[in-house]
Amino acid sequence: MDVKEAVVARKSIRAFSPKPVPKNVLAEIMETALWAPSWGNTQPWKLTLVGGETLEKIREAYVERFATGELSITTPDYPMPTEFGPIQKARYQGLGRGLFQVLGIAREDIEKRNEYYRDMMRCLGAPHVIYLHLDRGFNPYALMDAGIILQTIALLAVEQDLGTCFLAQSVRYPDIVREHTDIPDDQLLVMGMAIGYPTEDHPLNLFRSERGKPEEFLSYLDVS
Ligand SMILES: Cc1cc2nc3c(=O)[nH]c(=O)nc-3n(C[C@H](O)[C@H](O)[C@H](O)COP(=O)(O)O)c2cc1C
Image 1: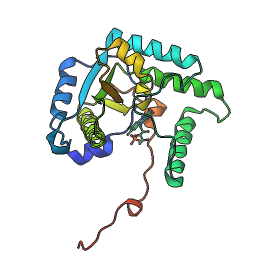
Image 2 (image 1 turned 135 degrees about the horizontal axis):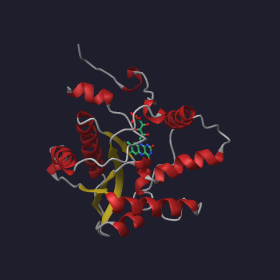
Image 3 (image 1 turned 60 degrees about the vertical axis):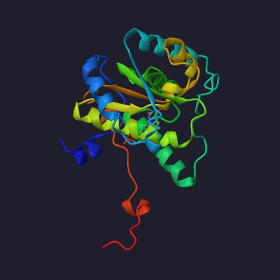
């Protein structure tokens, strides 16, 4: 598989087999990803890979917290965006519509929608989650580095027939993750990534998100 194939083949996988991935496969992916670039080679990232009983406990606690109906009971360490420009908002809403459509969930079906969100609280059933954390007080540039290493992991995972999903929802309740891991208080939980074997033919995994046209994003000046 060449790089272009991996970039195009990577997409968010939202339904996973519970089968664990061998540690050596995951370690090779994560160790290779450490070659990712970072501002001034600062390598600000810390990555904690969780699976097994520990992840089960995190899932259970997330579902329990979610059931209280209090999505805002704990603030994520790094808040999720709530405001978008009109174009971004339309794309965001389009994604939600597309996902509910493949699942056959009607707009007014609150129970089914909640089930979808509960599944996200369960980290989409993935056997592993990689939590990315940064030193408290990190410089915003470190967020670029965080994104770069996570995308590097996602691409390396494709090569191993593994699926990934960046999962902001997995760091919604950072206190729960801290309680069940050894991630210290001086680290901010920035992002989680679900990783594992995709459930083949699941409608969520057949879904492909759209992209704008190249001319919406790209300009070429003085280039022939
Ligand atoms: C920082 C970040 C956080 C994300 N968090 C979630 C999430 O919590 N739940 C989810 O279903 N998808 C999440 N995604 C996946 C995006 O929705 C997805 O990347 C986007 O729709 C493009 O689709 P694709 O990844 O299939 O190409 C996240 C993506 C990024 C980059």
